[in-house]
Length: 141
Image (tube, rainbow, N blue to C red; front, side, top):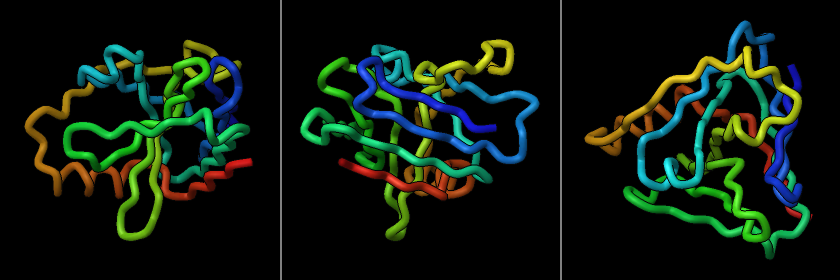
């Protein structure tokens, strides 16, 4: 299933090729203060691929907090955070915000909450290696 997504103004967009075809898509609402305030509801498909396109790189800011092991890509024009990336061992991994999806039926999303308070950094990074999207191409115009 090819899923298109973007920030509100379209400056930051993505194509997520979800393989195999999903019966449902996990949608994890993170309970950290940043995600709560920005409406971050994340998903990933470790067997899929992700292509991120940035039209105007000067209008994208990255924000890292807490353990500073992930970069939240914020469109400074519209304020939406459609993707988060993490570099591990010279490889980029990512998750995408289901609130940025375009044309995906809401009935396909399986909503749940996620709380990572108290998670050790090593466990956090290993979880990302295992579950985040590793086939990633980040293109800036």
